[in-house]
Amino acid sequence: MAAADPLALPAVPPPAPATHPRRDAVLAITFFLALALSGLGALRAPTQGTLALENRVLAPWPAPALTRQFASDFERAFADRFGARAALLRLHHLALIDAFHVSPAPNVLLGTEDWLYFLGEDGKSLDRHYRGTASVTDAEIAAVVAELSRRQRFLAGLGIPYVVMVVPEKSTIYPEHLPAWVSKSPAPSPFDRLVEAIRANGTVPFVDLRAPLRAAKSRGQVYYAGDSHWNLQGAAVGYDALMHEIQHALPPGRVQEIAPAAMPPYVAGTDFYWGDLARQIGLPTHFREPDYAPFAKVMADTTSRCARRIDPGADEGFEFYACDKPGLPRAVMYRDSMAIPLIPLLSENFSRVVYVGSRRLDPALILREKPDIVIEEMVERSLLAPAALPMPEPAR
Image (tube, rainbow, N blue to C red; front, side, top):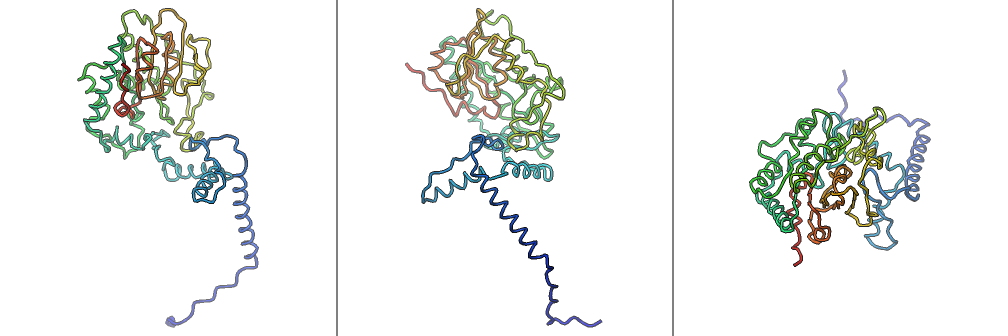
């Protein structure tokens, strides 16, 4: 066998087939048309002003100007509007989830069996409250207890009872659907430490829902799989515990009977739900789940409820409800989105209740409303918020 000549030139490739120029032309034209149609799609007037997949408003078109800022603003506006954007994003997200089991959203964690977990607004909630890899200091816990005690003293000076309720995160109640690599810290969680500190303080009535919710989940699902919130069945557990604490906090006979939390009927094959986390990763129908207690049916059935919303919705962050049954107390409730399914349930027990979407207790509102009780509800990942947003000094 002849040795290969190291100085020999490589073989000349065969001539390109006759179809080569035509193929390239077709590909180039197709690529150009795809770009052109995508660009033209951005010029269409949007049917809505929000991006459902990202849960945010469209970036506005900037006013023409010869500046760098105009270029970056134009790029953002164009990127929010180019043709087939939503379809391409869904395809991309589907590939990430099904092929690589990677979440397209940085603050959504893919669990097992199509369960999704919210990692918090800063993406560190699970690390902070479950895994223990992001520390919460004793000083931070003490500051929360001090602020809650300060609020309790202010209200007690007015003769108003105060009740605090923390709603557990889904990972606290359903850790079994977390990925296998997520391990719980053996140390007490911030929630454990807060409860212990509140009990040691002894001045703030506190509702700990962890045991009731864990017991209830053996009877039915109490959190949505694809949402960051509990469902109506979970909210009903919280409602029952909260109302019994309110009944105990108010003078005897002030709440003689707790309004029942009627569960709407579930129709198999009809009642479905896709949650905020499923929408956030851009695949709501991919994570569709049965809605065993449809909250929409509760809101639609106004004839069976006494309480009615009495404000026009003009005051953002406030909702006012009234029920004309004689002898009912008045309330103010500071709340977050976890309390949404609580609103129609709680409102049946008060002649007037104001729901406030804030973490900062406002003395002026309390003095104006003169409630018989003040309730504060917060989700577990927000349990440090009271210290970060202290109550202003009351006017003298």
